Length: 254
Image (cartoon, rainbow, N blue to C red):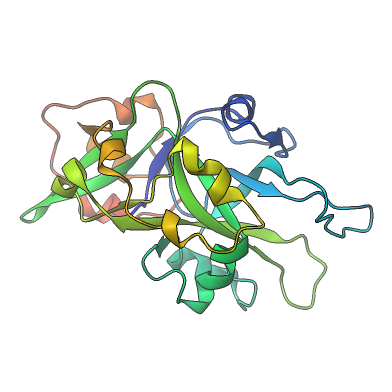
């Protein structure tokens, strides 16, 4: 699963890295080392431009864009946006079958830039926090799907939300947890984001072992368990971590 991650790069850095236009309106969040569900974060999509009336210009090339979305998918048909709290992750193996995810998977896919993500390894009754991150400064890109939801009977601005696809862990990650985010290598970004491509089944396989082998598994402080804690110290290696405060593990941001 993926329930917490770090995202410290500003929109200017992300637009350069993902070769995207910045549609955040200068409102991108500051560096966040403890991203939790319901937070609004940068994501990357690729969409065809629209005319003055809002009609999609399908003959025009699709443009890659950096957009802000809230973590926790709210399907367009939902009556209450609170359903998004239960849809932070989507199993890649069944996404093509579930009504809540099927349409988004075929036409509304995104990438979620991250420095790395956190997971907890169970040892008997205790859990130990780990941080998984890639080599160098390159972002990891979680495969995601997104939706636009509007409160029924209103003209309120739409709520744009996303869910992170997860898959079976492979290689060294199996020592920490049996699930992991579906990581999208840079060579697959274009195919994953292509709005004219409905069938992405071949991209839903577990992350290649060769990619996973480049990741660092780093034991970190249990301070990450509380969303009240935030800062680069959360991703620092800790050689002798303290036992987990399980009551804070699933604490939601206020």
